[in-house]
Length: 110
Image (cartoon, rainbow, N blue to C red; front, side):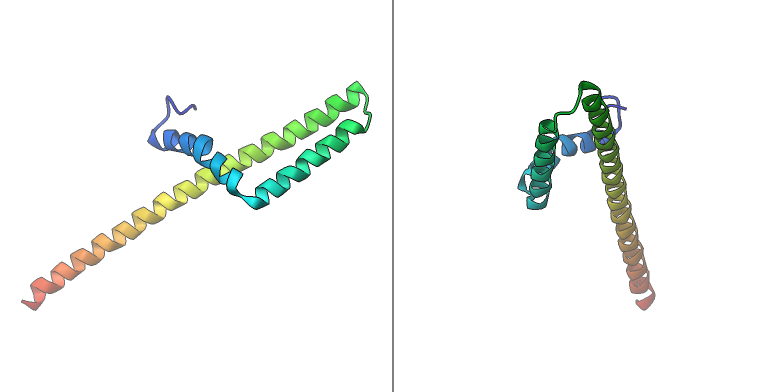
C-alpha cells in the first residue's frame, strides 16, 4: 500500500523513511563504515573477471539479499513505531487513571 492511499501512520512513516532516515544514515559513522566495506567488496567483485552468467548470478543473489534486508528494516521500523505509539498510549492511560484516582481521593478527603 502506498502512502497516498494509506492511513496517516503510513504517510508519516513514508515521509520519515525517505527524508529523516537518509539524514540519519548520512550522520551515522557505523553505517558509513559498513557502506564503505560494501563499496570495496563490489569493486573487488567487478575486478574478479566473472563471466556474464556468473555476474548475473551474483547480481541476483546480491539483489535478493538487499531486498530481504530492506524488507526487514522496514518491518522493524514499523514495529518500533507501533510499539512507541502503544507505549505512549499506555503511559497516557496510566496518567488519566492516576488523575481520576487523585480526584476521587480529594473528594473522599473533604
